[in-house]
Length: 371
Image (tube, rainbow, N blue to C red):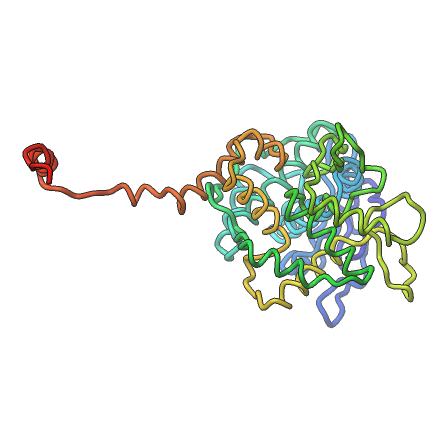
């Protein structure tokens, strides 16, 4: 997308030419009061100036993107900015500036996302991105916030979108890790997810300095979901601790920096933090090695398996909540409800009898002589 230069007073930027792919190749300035010289720009959804126009200044999306980068980590800034860019393009196609967006406009946009087949959780992500942007614009630049009275879209509750692995599958995945440095590293990462319930992002951001010993137990300080500081720790059980010590023994480079690094000797990124995408690709390959092609079983399923396994072996809600790092006990209780649905389903308690049948059976037992 072509970035429009600073907008002179009383002027606006328009598309003058498109290339064969329908993308703008040349822009031009026109007076704000004149008619759009190229009406096709709006039909194509071209965003020429993704900014909120206030009485004092314009607020470009680039400023908000910088705000996201300072506040969040991982893929969150990218996703929020991407969703907002799509909404800005949608608004431009309707002939609306971001400054003119109303509550009705946003509700129409979210409804169109649902009608196009987007999943409920994706529609909610769009909602969260829009809410974040307009709240920031209101607080920082005094813009009107059209999101104030819009309720969050409903999403499925009480169920998980990923399936858990069976005990046999977890052990089989770990067995694919051989004794090479790469196999030892991958085993350590998988153990942190399977035995500690860590998210992939937490594994990605782990540093050697995050390891600590507390009361004789090795712990790993981890980053919470959505970024922020590393204000909680995971206790490493024996399998995870042993796997991590094995990795530290063969990890090349200085004993500092990222805990998990690349091992490709011919690559320029040798000894740099292992990318999140590489962690996902690694796990996908090892999952397929044992014949698991279920798309609902991903690396995140290891976290699901860890929490469910702890509950199945007697973990209390508070213990499970602390391990999972949930801020709301209701999120933890979903795992208990799912576990009880199979181990203690209400369906097994259903018994249909005729009136008085139970009393009659009891009386017969009383008069039956002992043999």
